[in-house]
Image (cartoon, rainbow, N blue to C red; front, side, top):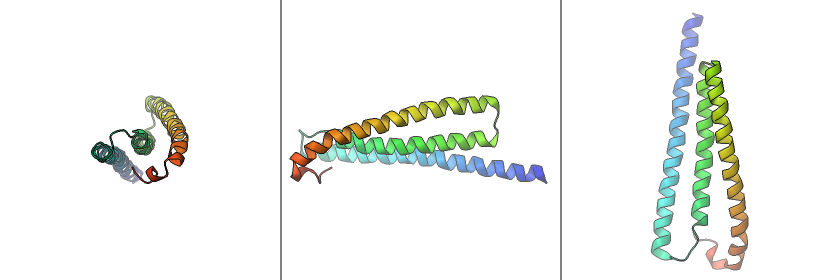
Length: 128
């Protein structure tokens, strides 16, 4: 009976992992759609504008996707925690955490540099 329950738990966690990975991919796809629409809108309306707001929007999608992918990796390791899988998870977690940290840092830096420009151009603040 214990083996049957363990098998059901493993199966459920694998399905959850797959769902979380799919959500991460969907978040990236949604970010790409948002970026393409914003780029087209910008190219059709104003050519001399900065791409920073578009980059910031895409970075937010990537940050969320990285968190979801890390969660999927944690789920995957929780099902069958061998030392090899734990080592791979640790390496992936370090890499993704570093990417997320630097992406977040870049977001903050870009937002800080954009804030004075938006204050100087009050009519430009509402446009994306």
